[in-house]
Image 1: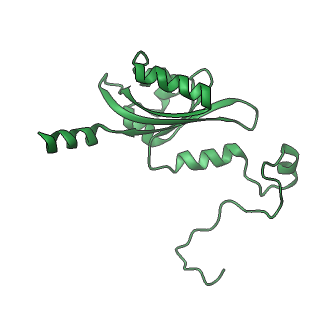
Image 2: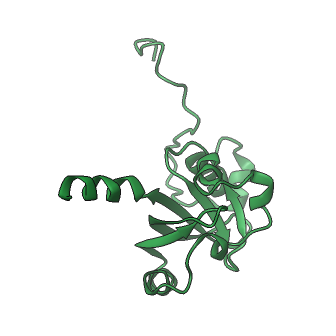
Amino acid sequence: MSDLPSHVPKTIVTIHERQDLFPTSETIEDNSEFVTTTQLYDAVYKNAFLPMYIAGENGKIINFNEKFSNLFGFLPSEIENLKSSDFFKTNDNSFISFIENRNDKGFAKAEVNCIKKSGEVFPCRISSVFYQSDNGEKRFMNTLVNTSDHISARWNVAG
């Protein structure tokens, strides 16, 4: 490993040669080097370039990254009391279809309309995947892409 350049980051996850693809809680307790599912998802969304949030089955926001709060204009302390439905035009057909697909397949993506704290509605692409936390809670990890600038650029080129 000493041949690696100094700018290569140290590993945060240790890969084991064990055949346990999905370690049990007993295996994790026996070996503190295993990263739990929750730790893995936390690392993914906290370091993501895109706005991401985790919601429970009831829609309550469990966790989110800074880009998510910036996108919608809420302070982190304000988001803690909100549900996913507070950020989307839930009566739009595209959102209804998105939820139906996600609930049916366990994952989905769609173009939906979002709502900022100011009330401004803007277009967004959302992808969502179902997973189960280490303690058995059903959760959805969601990634958003604001498409407002992309749409404006298309109008400027076409118009």
